[in-house]
Length: 190
Image 1: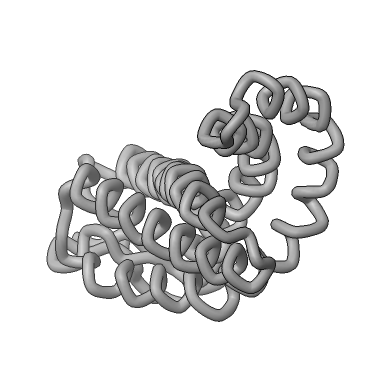
Image 2: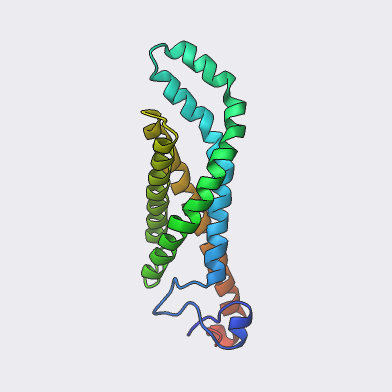
């Protein structure tokens, strides 16, 4: 009653998901999920910069003038965010987020509830995003803006990690369902 691993592993009898480990995963599935999460972050985070700039501008002594300035600089801020976010996100993925997500995934292999996984990975992403952004903001001497930066990063990172996990999990489980559908008499293929 197990589903063979995809690719070469499946040909040699290695199993991924079993009734005891309904949410087990392969290295390839993990890498795919991390890649989708990182890509989603890279696409969404720069777009959140103008919103973050407006929020910071509204807290300034002259909010109307500051908002006009923030809107005027929005395109440049989006372009510059790629220069800042890219190296930080690569470091966060490789040094903190990836290892933490791997550990969380291993810890949740026995939990079949997709909602539990989705919430857990979204929270992991939010915490990693907030911590990394706060550290980056502090290093870049952003002052009080570092808090807004950290909140923005927490929201975007949490959503991105949840998206990466969900997309990959759905594909893996759909592949399993196709294998079950092709098995004789509806049995799991060995």
